[in-house]
Image 1 (tube, rainbow, N blue to C red):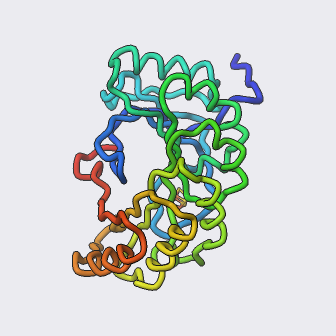
Image 2 (cartoon, rainbow, N blue to C red):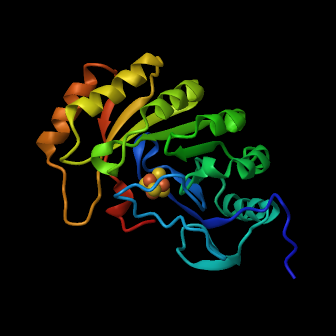
Length: 250
Ligand code: SF4
């Protein structure tokens, strides 16, 4: 019988793949996808609902998965990471903690990150809306990729205040701010995002990521316009689509 500990976590999956988005694109990472999210973005195609089972890649990069019962213990996750890194020393750049929204499980992160960071650097992928939770674990995080959730794409009001506070909390751990944009995204909202980055003296990259919505593409001309306006405010503005989709990867 499985003995459940209070520090066990409900995960969606653990696997080894390349990072498909943002400045770390192409690096191999170990992904730990935590269940649950505090938002409900219109374009979301991520499976983050809690389930009784967690998919775990048996051998890194094989795509062959086994199923573990949730919740999962830190000991088991740590052993799986050791298996991955033992097979391929030097391959993995970092552990990407992703979701859903990992900070919605902040108690889990408080329990797990001190041990996981002994194995590889910790990269947090977050929607950038839970600054108080970030403050509780930031000392155990090396790199943060945060989203700004634009109303034009998410179909809900942009949480500007939360994003502002989150940026201030992230400080120099911030690697990038990612804006998923569509043809509906406006110059005004991209400018405001850039100004909030500028206010916090962030030197992180601002990434414009064309939304991947079935049957829709974002025009290159529109992407260029958004890049041109943001680049007048912050120094490093890049257009990077989701590259892992081209390779048919997770
Ligand atoms: S924050 Fe991310 S996981 Fe959560 S609903 Fe939005 S896109 Fe989906």
